[in-house]
Amino acid sequence: MSGAALKRTLLRHPGLARPAVVAGMFLAWEIAARWWIDPAFLSPPSKVVASLGELFATKGVPAALRITLWELGVAFAISVVIGLVVGLSVGLSRFANRTGMPIILLLYGIPQITILPLFILYFGIGPPSKIAFGVTHGMFPIIVTIVAGVQNIKPILMTAAHSMGASRWQIFRWVIFPHMIPSFFAGMRLGMTGVLLGVLLAELYVSTAGIGYYTQLFTQSFNPTMLLALVSVLAGMAIVLNEIVRRAEIHFGRWRS
Amino acid sequence: MSADSTAIRVRDVSHQFGEPGDAQFVQALQNTSLDIVRGELMCLIGPSGCGKSTLLNMIGGLLTPTTGAVAVHDKPVRGPLPHDIAFVFQENALFPWCTIIENIKLGMVFQGVPKSEQEPRARKALEAVGLKGFMSHYPAQLSGGMRQRAALARALSLETGTLLMDEPFGALDEQTRMVLGEDLSVLLSRTEKTIVFVTHSLGEAVFLADRVAVFSARPGRIKEIIAIDEPHPRKPAFVTTEKFAKLRNSLYELLHEEIRKTVDQSAAMGAAP
Ligand SMILES: Nc1ncnc2c1ncn2[C@@H]1O[C@H](COP(=O)(O)OP(=O)(O)OP(=O)(O)O)[C@@H](O)[C@H]1O
Ligand SMILES: [Mg+2]
Image 1 (cartoon, rainbow over the protein chains, first blue to last red):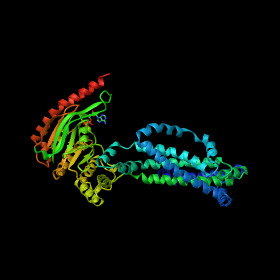
Image 2: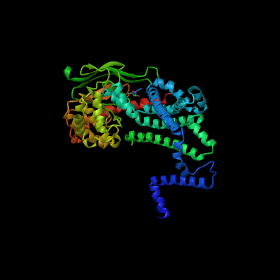
Image 3: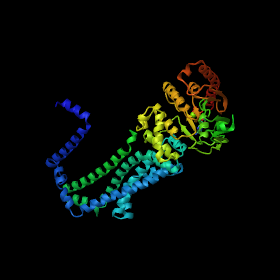
Image 4: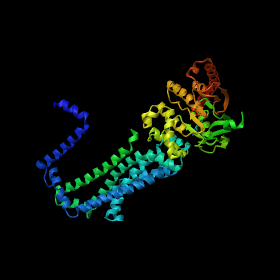
């Protein structure tokens, strides 16, 4: 295949180019780690993958990962419930909207990393502080997206439902709820990103237990292979969780296309 | 006309938006009375902003008159009467997340129709408007004209005695609305429905109506009612008759003056500091 033909094929199928780019990046990493960079700082991906077995055999690591996954799940569930309740009340009531929305936007704007030590102080170094920090990261994007989603509903749809005799509950169930589903899932995706950020930040910040302890351990013992293996597992977890929510979003937003 | 042939009775109705003195205060309708006979098609025509939609929404219970009263089949209207009155709006009011048949069934869910009756009634209504082949499409997949026919099917499926249509073909092109008007005339001649139909088109009014109520400029009142004495269903050839032209011209004369007033009014408002 000539160069021009290859270019044309790739342009027409971006799906083909994507794995190629990823493979190229891994290859560059492999080469750099093998021949250029001090092995005390970087391991090649082949070694990282090979050490996954050892990582899971390290005492305490599987438990720490399990706990992190559990924290992510709990923090996400709490964020969705709070986001839904607050988002709907603020979105559907003019009064709550005028009062609450500026406060929510203000809080959302705070870089929360500055108050992470307070979370540890109040909730301890165990899962509660990590869940709490995940929730404060996850709930705001959900609230904001739901409020926006509820508000841009066409008034004529409410009028039409009202004229056909819909009760308040029916209007919620059959008009507001389906209207808001796409924004709800968009909010959940952003919320998931937030929860991952919050929980993992808190996990890494606490260096005496959990994931943070092991990253600390591997860093201080100059064991980049294990460090990268652990980080890769966390990244893999994040990718899978994000992807689940993204798929759900596409699935429930079909009528929009 | 005997008392019991009156389907809709509008008595001395006024409507204000906002409070007097507000910048947004509008006297939309003033002391309007109108009797609509059972089974007739009454067209409302008048300058933009004179209060036609306001009147229609008051008849349908979506707005409460500031003063005066509306009664449908001798029942005072205090809110929507989903068993008596169905609406077709100018704007696309189909639920975009439901297919066409789901839209029609949802209307019946709201109205309280038993589940077993919903499917056959929805199919019948879709057949009546010629959309049977599109029942599994989403509204976004239909043309504007088809969407309005679907909205009409939804209203028909509710089997109400009264149908209120607010410029249902207003957003469509001239040719499409002519054809839809012809279909509507055929369709409605088979039912016993009382219909109130708002339009801006003189031709549409003469073609469809039994009577046409002409509104004055805002604050709107009914200036005159013209009877169109021609049996339903109306043939497309009616449009080319001299009778049609005469009726259309007399409507035009009545309206022209009011539209001039409306335009001058808003120009004066625009010029005010
Ligand atoms: N919700 C509202 N709040 C304030 N004023 C309103 C509202 N709805 C309508 N109006 C005013 O009331 C007047 C009558 O409105 P309406 O919609 O009944 O007119 P219309 O005759 O249907 O006009 P068109 O032919 O343009 O549809 C208009 O001047 C409009 O500005
Ligand atoms: Mg109107």
